[in-house]
Image 1 (cartoon, rainbow, N blue to C red):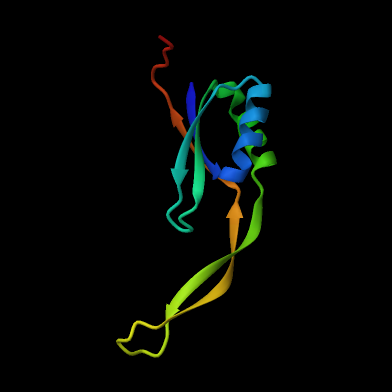
Image 2 (image 1 turned 180 degrees about the horizontal axis):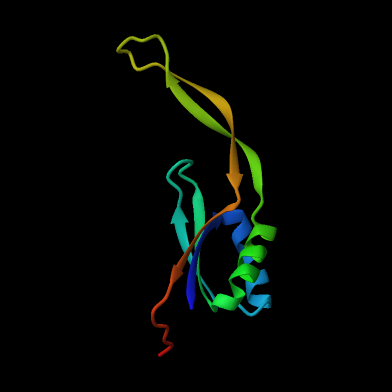
Amino acid sequence: MKLIIAIVQDEDSTKLVSKLMQNGFSVTKLATTGGFLKAGNTTLLLGVDESRIEEAVHIIESVCKSRKQLTTATTMIGGGVSGDFSSYPVEVTVGGATLFVLTVEQFMKV
């Protein structure tokens, strides 16, 4: 038995959970926040038999595609102590998924 911890963007989570459940995977969904963009993420926990790891990863890859997004970066201007800041748009890559696959020594449903 393996535990897949999948961190995905919020906008991918509903479709991903549906697709995983349609394929017989049990999923626990946790709301989380990413550190870089300070945006909402979803962390999914899946208990998976070793023989189905590739299937689960394939489903996650098919739903969670990387894409470009504009965000705002802030920088100090003027070099003085006045605290003047300027904001400008920056394109970043978001989406995809971060996966951790862990060995589970014991699994119980009580």
